[in-house]
Length: 265
Length: 216
Image (cartoon, rainbow over all chains, first blue to last red):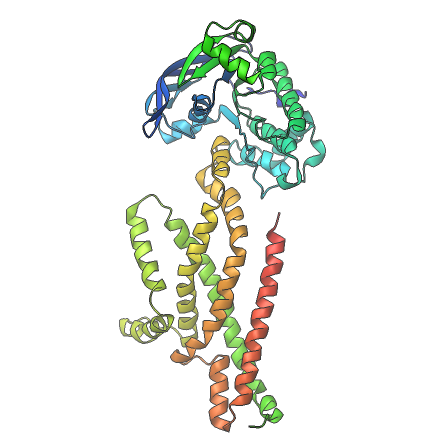
């Protein structure tokens, strides 16, 4: 992987040195309700810089909501969210835009811009948000496309690509912003089975070769076991169990976790 | 009744003069309605009732009153307030304004049809709101609505003879004048009927070509 694609160049090395255990994300007493349905219930958790955390649990247990709160697609009803020492909620719009630069997200449905070529999908935000020159952005995009194995698809439109290819472009697009945190929201759930491996290989590669912090909601338990430093088991808006993947997958404490895992594995 | 070819050729110079006016009204009226309709549609999304209420009220009023009344109003009432435009300018503006209240609904539907995931992706990339509209939402929304806008162009074409009421001589006006001078009604009216069909056919071809160009 070219060094150009390594994230975190703009980060103060004192604050989050590569491989450090400094805390990067903190949620305190976060509650989110949709109508009368409490999706997250006074949730506390934190993620250290560079760690890969996988969120597992039955659907509706609040995993995706956490990613959407961190990406500011949702606002919590109560609680505080801090990223890299800066408050993301509550915060002013200006501050939110600043903190959002540190976070990238890949969606279940890819959400590429269909009106743009693959290359422009990736260069649009680096140019308009980070102020890169067009040449710099194109160079960065080409490096990333190379990394995800799609160097020959620069001029294609998303509709001309398979789901797996679209998702790899979406990963490249998120990385082009050089976020400190990458949020992965069921990124293989919408893919045909034969296309899943290609996307997961790219993510394994990123997990191995960068110090980017990853929060991952997935039903791919083998993938979770491979890349995770920590696994959080959710149920009804709470984290009911957490630990290293070896522990959670082989010898969970709770029957609820064991039930869930036997249902999905 | 006998068909008289000499009346057809005699009417031709008048037809060209009228055709030019009809086309001017159609093209300029379309452009105004496309632009103004988009402005209305965007203003209706401003999260403030101080904007959406007046815009909603004005556009509802214009949409639900007859174009003919609006033409008379703009042509006879505005000059009393010291605002005077040529009859043609008044006609173009009235038609453009009237149809903008329809195209705004078309744009609204087009904007709402852009999947919410596109907005979310733009947020995740930290794109500013303005850039999200210009680079992401509007290109997708407009592409979706070209066929519907095209229907209003055809509809507008069929309303152009109304400007006759404010003394603008487009094709029907020319045909009527010629008929009254020569007591030959069949030929001029038939000729402009054919001309209307030809224009709407060419317009629909042009719009289909545009649709294909915008496809991605």
